[in-house]
Amino acid sequence: MNIGFAGTFLVIATVSLLLLGLPVAFALGIAGLYGIFSTTGTAAWVTLTSGAALHHLSHFGFLAIPLFVLMSVFITQSGIGARLIDATSKWFNFLPGYLHSASVIACGVFSAMSGSSIATAAAVGGVVLPEMKARGHSMRLGMGAVAAGGTLGMLIPPSNHFILYGVLTETSISKLFAAGMVPGVLLVVAFVTFNVIVFHMRPDLAPEGETAGKVTWADRWISLRRIWTAAILIVTVIGGTFLGVVTPTEAAGLGALAALIIGVLLTRTLSLESAWGAALQAVQITAMLGMIILGGLILGRGMALMNISGAIVKWISESGFSPWQVMLLINLLLLVLGLLMDAAAITLITVPLLFPVVQSLGFDPIWFGVVFCINMELALITPPVGINLFVIRSITGEPMKEIILGVLPYTAILALGLIVVMVFPGLTLWLPSMM
Image 1 (cartoon, helix red, strand yellow):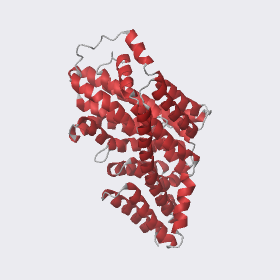
Image 2 (cartoon, one colour):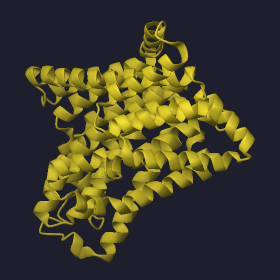
Image 3 (cartoon, helix red, strand yellow):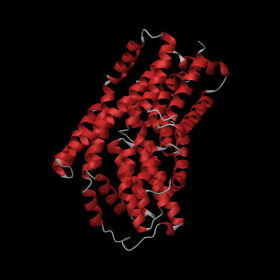
Image 4 (spheres, one colour):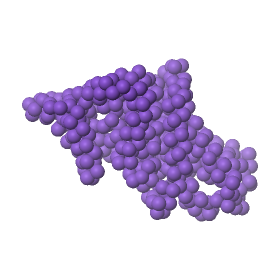
């Protein structure tokens, strides 16, 4: 069988099944089974598919995903989003359009506790967007700020996407976490800077109202005391991982336990009944993610048996493209796929396919992990399937057109951030080099 034709058919079949509305797990799995059948026949498919699942799903790093999901659900249920918005809005109320900037900063802090983009957008947006509407602030820019700020959950550790990438490529998850910190903080600064410039030029977009300027330093310190639990979780998860005291999986377990203790015993924002409900919700989310990952692993095994990556590497070596030209093509491919599919599906389809190519070109796997995740951030806020856009619509009920128009400038900033990370790889590799 011609590998080029078979590989092209496999990718087209996968995308077509997804566009037809087939559940992601089944679309990936069916396409993967085609790859296995076409290369080995029917005799070995059970062994090969179960082997793919066992090899990756038994990886110790994969345990971090359900544990971080559990921690994220505990945090969301405990209502820390409201306390974060209260604190950030009081500390940054001197900025023009401070609610918009406060929402971005709150997204950054929440991301450092949850590792989930969707949970970040939902938790922060559910609090700040109704407040913006009540005060007569620009909902268009507010929705854009929260949707874009939510994507930080994919870049700021403990990112579940870094865990998935690390397991699929056997790259250090701890170093991926460290690599995402500087770009994540820089994106927060860039989003806030944009907000300040816009609202300085157009103060009518964010009327100050009667309460602006009346926040005292006592109010600020009190609001900070109300989110001390966030500092505990961030130090436990990120600090422990970066210092090498615990592995990412151990940090996830400690974070989930700490979130439960904080919610039930310290802040008393979680009852035992609501904690049990949160645990059941985490099980449902984990089961869904597990099915998607399993389908992706089967697809990856099918691609490996068909040697699609090897064929791509050979084609590139014979085509005369420079490594940076190939990297540009990879980014364009990810951008197009981001318009058609969700980030999890793109990751499971493309990482097993592209990672050997990236390695053959001499690019750093840690750096490429950050580049890849920024591309997935763009996928979260680009129509027609950007999931964060739908999260915002479910909160506000605003027309999708308004949400898309609001997120456009932040999308441009995110794209600029991608370019900066590609041109200056030291931004991502500085912290990992210290570990």
